[in-house]
Length: 261
Ligand SMILES: NC(=O)c1ccc[n+]([C@@H]2O[C@H](COP(=O)([O-])OP(=O)(O)OC[C@H]3O[C@@H](n4cnc5c(N)ncnc54)[C@H](O)[C@@H]3O)[C@@H](O)[C@H]2O)c1
View 1 (tube, rainbow, N blue to C red):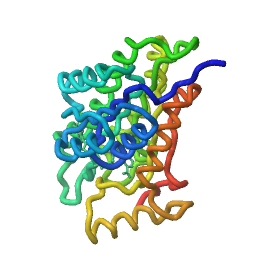
View 2 (tube, rainbow, N blue to C red):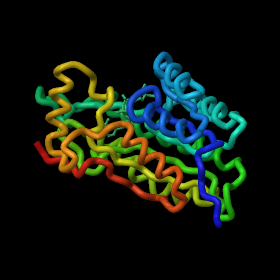
View 3 (tube, rainbow, N blue to C red):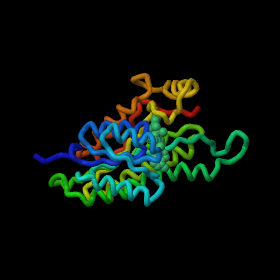
């Protein structure tokens, strides 16, 4: 029988893993036996997650080429093959194309959101996949590993004031098929997850944030609540382990469809 991708005895690098979806992913992959590299700009939280998961923290700015190279080098030097690259680093942003006061959307903030969310994802995907390509294949298919990117349903149907964010996530969705085709030559699969409304620190904390989250999650079809980061991590694990999942963009959203306000 064909040997399939297993997480046990392999390494994984996860950007944005000091918090939220990335953190839950690091915990899930570590629980499945991966040596996890926590690649994040947040040093305090990142070190804590690394300690709790038996992983390694690598201070990483996904926008910076040298920083990502250094983090991937660490992931590739763990004594086990690097097989999984997960992009979870990202930021939200709210600004209209023309704001209520008549001023146009700032070009600098648009660039910043694209830089972190889209260019950052591309940066780790390309450098991470190049390192995975240097490992021995797992089986006779030539399977070496998997890249899992995090877009958003906002990249499919964006909301008011979400132009920059939607553009960044739409870019990640658009890269999925060509990246999967490019990386087929080196035995690396690429899939993208589009989360809906998942309860993480990205929405802040306190009463105003709880109110905002309740409003956002109201149109969820079923189950009638926000998703959890652990549920997201379960999808990442499935995409990493299932050898036939490739070039797919998966909505993970409890059935919600954003409507114009
Ligand atoms: N939570 C949701 O509802 C939701 C929905 C759709 C998509 N997403 C996407 O999922 C991803 C994770 O979001 P989250 O909810 O876990 O947010 P979060 O704020 O909890 O975590 C994001 C992490 O990314 C890190 N980060 C930010 N900029 C970075 C950089 N330049 N380099 C390295 N790390 C950086 C932060 O330090 C943080 O640890 C984001 O891309 C977000 O857009 C989240």
